[in-house]
Every structure is written in structure tokens, then in C-alpha cells.
Length: 391
Image (cartoon, rainbow, N blue to C red):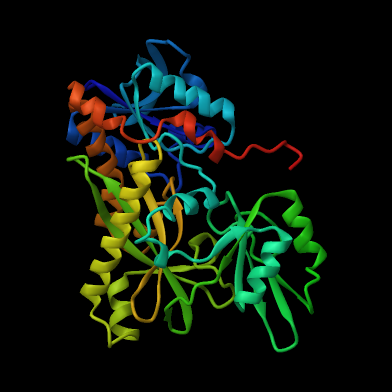
């Protein structure tokens, strides 16, 4: 087994699936392939597998074509691909940093409103940001006066779970909402109302969890359906941010969401631009999206502890102007595979391993000092929203 090891921090569900070869959306074999390319062994473990101060950790490694669990030296470099929600886990991760471990994407579940506030600190990014507020009753009323179409979504969620749409009609307002908060919800319902008295269902959901209210962007369309883009932005072999790929996600006719998990369909962007927007220059539009995405990644990388692997949801107007919808610290990479963009899909796994190699090679004091330029993890505790189990 080639050494050193590079750690891949995973959640419990994925950890159980690794020896069975049923990891669904996470192509762990591509980490292994990239590790061989860059001269190290990826090892997969959970946060509770690594005891404070331990010199070894029980982890899954590839051996003779299959994954086995064995004790390996604690990796000096770790890529976080797990989502944790509590302060306990945050402090566990922080303890590794204090022990000198280099952990990138240290915390990948920041609240949407917190990320919005961070990005709004850059004046050049503000024109690309939708108007967004905490979804209090008063803020929703205010936004209803400003816009005819609003999106209300959980402050911390993914793949479109729990997202609702509020739109003005001739007779009042219409709320479109998922029948369940499951990732696999397939039933959508509507409520109509007049005046400012929000429906009981909406008020009830706002009480159970924190939501944000956001201007619904005037997205470009493909075959009559709105689409947005998943832009993978990652640090690579030289430590610099780069755009790995851009894939378009088109909403289905039964749902306003573009998420693949909610029925959206994925396509390459350039054919859509050629077919729907002949007045635009596809290469110029794509270049603008790439430059904007790199600017977002650079800004977040300067304010959030050691971010290195992001999935941005970016919308474009009919004029090709990019607008940021949200940022994902744990990118769901399968959109590229579903669109037949296999090179980009493989690269989303290769680049983090190239960056891990870069970190392994950065042993000088100057390099370590550079890695500490971002905000310290303890300062970001304010971004971690912890709720009781009853919520």
C-alpha cells in the first residue's frame, strides 16, 4: 500500500456502504484511482473513528480490488465529505486542526443566510446576489411588496428539500409547497390566499425550522422551463481555484425546482445557449460564468476556514448575466455524470486529490502560514445553527 494516506471523512451511511460497493452518488473508486495517480492511499473513516491525540485510525482502504478496514497512521491531510450539524462535531474537527492536521472543507454546511452575508461584503458581487432575508413574517410581508415571485427555503437544506414558492396572482397569492419534507417528495400542493394573512401551513413550517425568503430570479429557460447551473469550483494541483465543469439543470414541467433529485434534467450548457439564445455568444457567456464563479470561490475561501471544493448554483438571465442562487460545500457531483460529461465528473474527484498532494508537499513554514490566512474555525461558530431534536 503506497504511503502516506490521505483521509476522506465520510458520514455513517456512506461508511456502511463502502465495503458493499453500493455508495450510489459518491464514486469512491475515483478517489482510489486519483490517489494512485498522485502517490498516496485514500482512506475512508468517520469523525468518531478518530480519537483525540491518536496516532492511528481504523479506516477503509482498497486492497487487492476490495475495501478492507484496517488501522492506518492518522492522515496529515483530510478531505471532508461528510455533513455534520452540531457544535460537538465542530469542536472535534477543530481539535484535529490544533494537532496540525490539514483538513480542507473543514465545515461544509453553513447557513445560506450566513454565506449570503459573507458574499455581500464584496461590493462587486452584490449585483449578482438575489435579495434575501431571514423568513420572518415581517420580512415576507416586505418582500411581497417588492416582488411578485418569491422563494422560501430552509436555511440549511440541500437537493431542493422543503423549498416553497410564493407568487402573486390576479386574485391574490398562491403558495406552492411540497407535501412532505422528504428528499424524494414527488407531490406538490398549492394554497391560495388574499391579503397579508399567511397560510397556517406556511406559518407552521416557519416556526419549526429556520427559513430564508428570497427574490425568485428571472432565470433563462430551455424549452419553456427555467434552468440554472451547477458550477464545480475546486482547488487543484497548484493550490489555485479552478472551474472543473458547468452543467445546466432544467426544471421539469411538474415542478419549479431544477434539482435533479426533484425531477430536473441535466444538459450541457452550450447547446442550450445556441438553441435558445442566438443573440448571445456562448463562449463569452461561459467565460463570464467562470470568472464570476472563481470570484465567489476566492471570496469565500478568504472568509471560511480552508474551503477548497464548492458546488455553486448559478442562474443566468436571458442576457447571460450570472446570478448566484446558493453555495454548496458538499457538491453532489453526479449531475456531470448524468449529463454525459464524464471527463468533468471524473475531474471533480481527481482535483481534490491533486490538492491533497499539493498540501502534502507544502511542508515549509511559509506554506503553513499561507494555509492559516483564512478565518479561524472558532470564529465561525456563529454560522452553526443547532436545534433540539424536536425541531
